[in-house]
Length: 558
Image 1 (tube, helix red, strand yellow):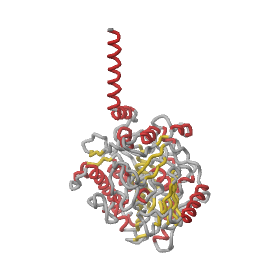
Image 2: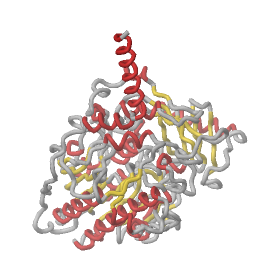
Image 3: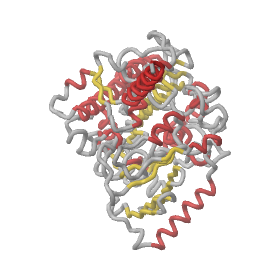
Image 4: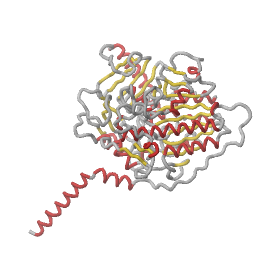
């Protein structure tokens, strides 16, 4: 009897422990994730390579500063009369780039998610030409996002476990495995091209294009690189007294990021070390120092902070400056945008202070639209859709260029242009010759914005993420989803916010645009790795709103 009592008691204890583990699944996951974070050394100074003591005689090509925001929605700046919280978070410095130069009113991202979009910027090519179709992510992330959902959801995500066998060797196990998912080394990046014209090239912030040997920024044409190789970083340690945090409990992406992201940077592949203060401030501090060090030679700076991507972390100074915003999450988000705008202003002011302003091409854009999973409904207004959708909200971003004396002030360019054009435009400004051994999908936009060329730079533009494909031909845009057996056709000239699907009324147009997609697919290659997840994204409401039958959604492959 005593034995059975012990056995019964043991079973009860085990059941209680299992129940406790179930209740604290997230806490246990966080403990395991934190235990696997890499060692991060204390902050130490960075020594930037110094340019010549005096500029060379004669003309020199313009400096080029490319500022790439992360997950910034079309309505996150006040340039177009909107802005966060109904315009309560002014963005005068970002806006000034558009006012002092050209605003591309139909500027399109390279993709609806970050890494492929960045690859399109760096190479000037549609990423399906070289297989970098999906955003590199750890298998644990893909599994979490591909399996977790809210209790009442009726459209569920899918994790394709059977496709793990098709992943490239060394990409599925271990914390560093994701580093092997990289842009092929055969691709020529803009930094390498600009070095042929004597540019000193520097990268700041997020890379997300590979970190295996040969794929890091300092091995792809950048003389110097300060930032992080993965898709994100903390802005401050979670419990830093200067941090205002906002977590989104409904979002598996958010639940993955908080325990898994380190607060660290690397300099030219050095061991990891801590930044000094808030990440966006720190990267800007160093960018200011680098501009001063290179004032007497042409330079290309790729400034790619993770702002305003999740995790939502604001600096108290910026949070406290927005007491009029009562919603905590919106206030944190607005504070992050306020901080980014101030730091953009510091970069612009440094160019002025160093006498470089008039000989610098400044480009500002975002890698993709604002994310629906943060739960804020207005970030992409007036457009429908979110990051990871090819509705306008996912790929139609702020896109400005400023070059005093070359690009007329307060210009507005109406026709579609894209991230792929940054490569050719920068090369033309620098006097560099484009590679002749491959298709470059981008075009030099300078003749169009200076009045030397007219018309559309692009008749046709394409996007693809697995079975989800899109073509924009003239003003007609067709989205196709093989997984949903569905198409959407919009006439953006008369319906720029995609309210009226014309696919049933115009079957011949659908057929013609599908043929364009098929022709583009014939020029594309197989993805370098398979999509491991497919998840629903509802087009007309953010992720914190319950799914509703009859509402539009897409299935996102990654």
